[in-house]
Figure 1 (tube, rainbow, N blue to C red):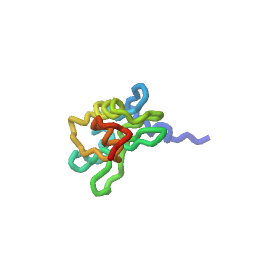
Figure 2: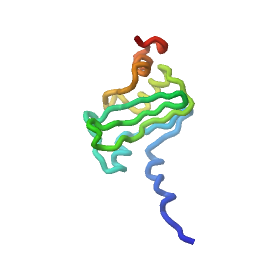
Figure 3: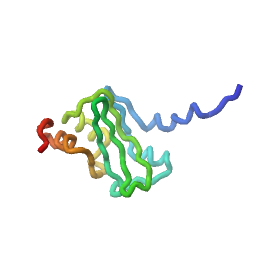
Figure 4: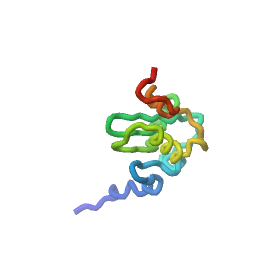
Length: 120
């Protein structure tokens, strides 16, 4: 029998992410950057939020796509509503870093508090 250390590789990331109710989010934005040995400067990253029929994903994308994206929040079985968007932005501590937010027109309309059905 051979014993390996691959089963413990997620332990350093378990301290960084927190599970609250219906979504999991990164409670320390600089934590994943330190774990991946990258430097976090808000002007080089943008916050991308994508919602499909079954889940909501939030990741940081590097401007120029030279560095890999890293996940910030994940909410399965969640509808895109203003309260969901505001909860994610609050938990990610958006006011501290002020990155650009990217998404489709429906997501931007919901984030601004506009009517979700008509985005024209």
